[in-house]
Length: 253
Image (cartoon, rainbow, N blue to C red; front, side):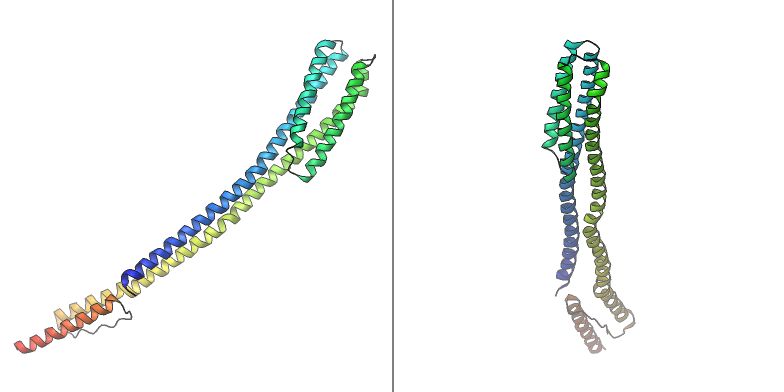
């Protein structure tokens, strides 16, 4: 195998290992990023829907207090808008759940909001729309529905934290194949450098020293090489040349 082929093969192997390490890392990180991005986005949307439901409950509570205070016209409009906002976000949350426990909590929110709706309708149609009646009949259902929504927020916040932890750990696992290949490439680089010095640089140094000794001190050109490539051919050519020089020198004498 020639010197050029050996050197080219060494660089090709090194470049291939570096390319493989980069490709593996990019592939794993891209796949991980897409998976975690979907989970985080869904959890964030669930939290956003839940916060909107809490806002709707607060608005409905304020409107009901206005109704109990006698401002029935603006109160009914506020209650209607709050109920519409709550239902819209509840429907969005139903179609966005990503966790097993989340479905159960959404069902609890839906059931509690249905009971609240009935109590609100009864309160609005009741002849007794006093504040005490609101606090006794409607207030507990608003509080219960609010607690279920807060539980829904909590479970999604925990899921966000778990996703972040998973992303951190998975990123480390995804970088391991690339790190292994990079370390292997560095080891191969050192080995390749040693082989280049041992089989190419060192023989050239010995050939140069042998030629200088022959020219300056007329020492016999005796250099041993372990390779069977162009350097061996060069050594044989130099040996033939030194023999010819010796022969011509003897004839001239």
